[in-house]
Image 1 (cartoon, rainbow, N blue to C red):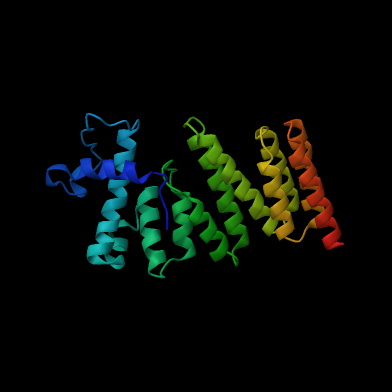
Image 2 (image 1 turned 45 degrees about the vertical axis):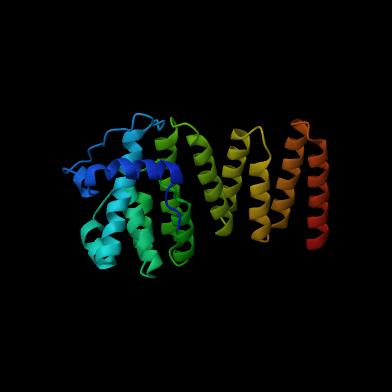
Length: 249
């Protein structure tokens, strides 16, 4: 279960520095995190943020491995740090001991731009089928917080856009069609150089059995493709819209 955006190379560089001279993960907390010296040749721009993210994840994982999930929960269950909550939740998921409350806790922590939240959003949707309003409200709160946290981070708004697309898709699945349409339209206007949002909307509505909405969004995608001088794509999208309409009529 992936829970971090960091690459294997970034994680390895952070681990090497954190474990230098026989240090343990906990040695870097007194009680707040103390950043290890950066290697002379490092090209990582956010050395402090990356090493803290890795150290917090590793110290939770170490307790899980050496003492078990119960011990890790006893120590870290009250943590409000996203990567610690995510690491603990991932361990619980692996043991078949994860519940909805623990998933929601990850999503309600202060945002960590290095945490990969998609699995937790998916788990919330799956596990929260009987708590629809809670899941919707949590998803909405998360997307708002995510947008505030990532607005000034390189490539952050692309991640925010993906999160908003996911929320719009979720709206479709729970039949909140007006909200879904409004959010997809907003996203379509934000992402003016592609047809991806319109195609996402079409797939979401088609999966939900809403053929008229799906066909409409294929048409919107075709118009955008023409505006981008992608005539072949526009023709294919119109043909697909006709095929969907005929198949479902």
